Image (cartoon, rainbow, N blue to C red; front, side, top):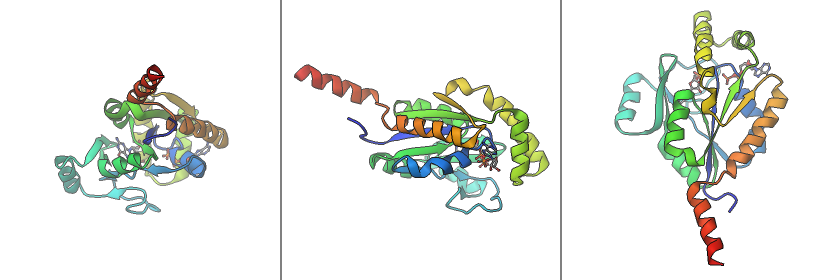
Length: 206
Ligand code: ADP
Ligand code: 5GP
């Protein structure tokens, strides 16, 4: 009964909370996974690679993909479009993999509605708002006005923590990574309702 047909782990949290850093820490220790590469209209940042970090497209192409129902979910975040492609997710689930999404609170709400049965969600928070600001400034990938917008956005995102199964406060990186690893293990063995019913039925036959 233990792992069967794949599962989803949604990771959300303010930009700069440490989602990428935490995933890098655990990715080699949590078994076969597929990290969903989103499509975005955001400008590529220094150090990012098209097709690795995101599929970078223009707004026209993104809107065409919406029309063609290419996305499992999509949302406008910080003024740019972001979306999760259906096809590779379906394939990874069929192959029994843990599918990991780094998506925002709107995306989490959509996934919970569409695939809540096989989904575990975790919100990553920085310990304080001032630490978030410090990390964004230290990362040096965004201009000051962008950082200001991201901090304002974080205040709103944090209001929606109760929509998640778990909250991980990323203060000490190693400690937070250990907790996230435990959640990833648990996500794999979460049992969808239909499988619970199958399991119960088997017991009735004995
Ligand atoms: P996100 O993916 O959520 O946008 P990043 O992983 O890029 O965030 O982290 C933002 C910045 O904060 C990076 O420069 C990273 O090295 C740093 N960082 C991440 N976690 C910690 C931590 N626990 N303590 C101190 N700095 C951290
Ligand atoms: P960034 O521009 O910093 O990479 O990401 C900005 C925000 O967009 C983050 O909160 C990230 O989780 C979110 N995001 C990235 N990809 C997707 C996606 O496919 N769907 C949704 N809903 N949000 C996404």
